[in-house]
Image (cartoon, rainbow, N blue to C red; front, top):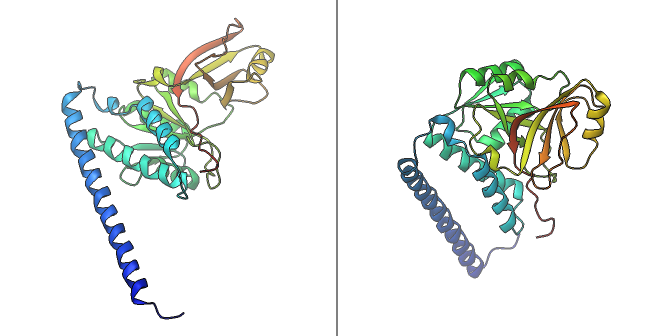
Length: 266
């Protein structure tokens, strides 16, 4: 490698100084954000720990982030940074933990991606145990694998838990290899403002359920793909497909944001 010229050394020093300045400004902005959060806590009415989770607000923030993103920096990296910021500042408002439905390494990786490293994780042996922990500890969250065919979600709904997010929240992208999972909370603040509603369906007519699941705009979250007798689905609110078949019992089960879509060419 040829020796660097004085001009090269001066340019490198200048670029590093600019990076240091950017880092200092980013740090200052984070501290400013923390100060605003403290003001927010004093300005809004007390809702308890559960009120700190505002899924509709987070959905708007992530969608705006995707809309303004450009350049070579991978969006998944930016999304992870913002998820860490959001989760950390939620912790400042009201400490919480996340119950994991199983000890699968990919589920823990997703939890760290979604909630950062300051959020305590508690691993339960399986999905049902995590949801039972949530029911007994409102103000926390449960992260459980999607799928399954044994109507496991019905016990959670009976206990007052609802879906507030379907993960991964970023639409299919290179490097986004997390398995599908659901976030449950023991409250529904902000869920009605999310663009997709989550519903639990049950019927004795598997043909009717199979026909419903085949329609555009109905995404299966859990339950047998061939219909069966019970399913957990997500349906768009705008122009939502009406479930008016009297053979199918419908129960509100929460809500979720639409997947975040990122421009392929930036």
